[in-house]
Length: 158
Ligand code: FES
Image (cartoon, rainbow, N blue to C red; front, side, top):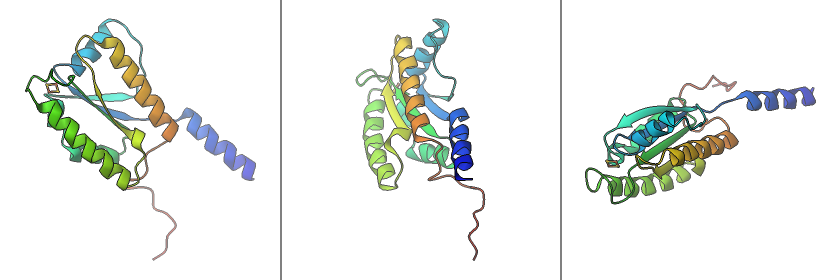
């Protein structure tokens, strides 16, 4: 009986694929993703892309909402420091995300679920590597359950 349960759990995890939301800056990382596509560089199909004007536009609430609404991981990618089209947007983002990372750890969320990267328009190969790494990291962590709303009701009796 116990063996069957273990097998089931393993089977479910083997087939499970993470859903990852990627916020990509229009000027660099989105163009990097485009270059990866045009160059036919393979990367995991687990990301859903949201094109943003600048990494500084990402409000930490967006990230929390993603995790609350069923995404297993979030990637934010912008221009390299010094290359932001709005001069300091990515510096602002870097500071915000450093604070957010600490908050997420405090909340008990695994550090690999939310990742940040800098990818330029000419780095299609790097974009594919980043997506591959994020997907593998989130896969190892399994489904995100910490912040999810509307989990199936448990057998708790009130
Ligand atoms: Fe790309 Fe600001 S424009 S990070």
